Image (cartoon, rainbow, N blue to C red; front, side):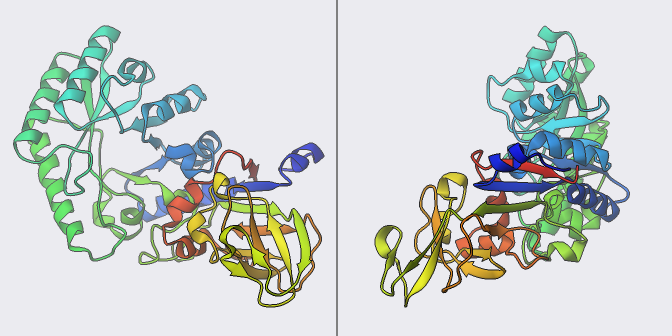
Length: 387
């Protein structure tokens, strides 16, 4: 997709280029990893910072038949965007008093982990006059959302089947989530998988007939074929980022990072040795040098924890954040090189053109690559390329 001069001018300060061809290729690569299962592209948190609606459309075009969000508001926005009617949309993070009726009317699949939620969705279905699509979530060991095994699960299954007989809902899925699938060989993986099988088998013995059973997230999709069941839920891998270095690099799985974050140098200036840089003077120039000002800061999602460590490609060379990352800007020591103001500073991208990657920034900030891409703020325009 070509840009107009006005579009380019509007993104000269900073831009996050989103490669939708790469996203589509990632979806196809993930489908090849789980050929017997349907694929859900998870587009929560504005598609991990990449833009929910454009990424959802690209994922569906590449073969995703489900979309997943955390909040019902995210899911309702997807449905309102006019995606094909046969695309199933699921949301799983509910609180009491949520928009159950709107979700039912929009044909969303809603997750239920406890009796309060089952009661609320049943009451909303009664008022709406149409059955809700409900997926029962089992806590198989993550200890977060989900229903506990044993009596709690038995009660939830029993009451869901009662509501189904009354025409208030249809149980469309049984699901859970791994705690440590990004740590290959972790003993909890086998425990959770066995417990999931037990809990789904119990529900089916009681009469539940789900459309899908699913527990595989991105790392399980890539490394645990025995966990694929009927549906795999792929989040970070859709965007070409590895779930963790222990699992492998994106290239190991035929994935390509989708986001490239860059900015234009706002200033290039010569300074003497011993010159303090940024708040607190945590960096002092070791000798006469040139400094480049990058107009991005923690208000844009650049982690302050990457002060003095974050890598940036400027003028063909890796540079490092000099001193503290401020709210709107940070400095790099150019080592005497003198690129022109407006020269491109690439913070991260696919990595095959010499630039750092999101994983490099994660290592520099002591966090995970998920956080690096997801936290890029709305002040940074998303520019969709290769649509």
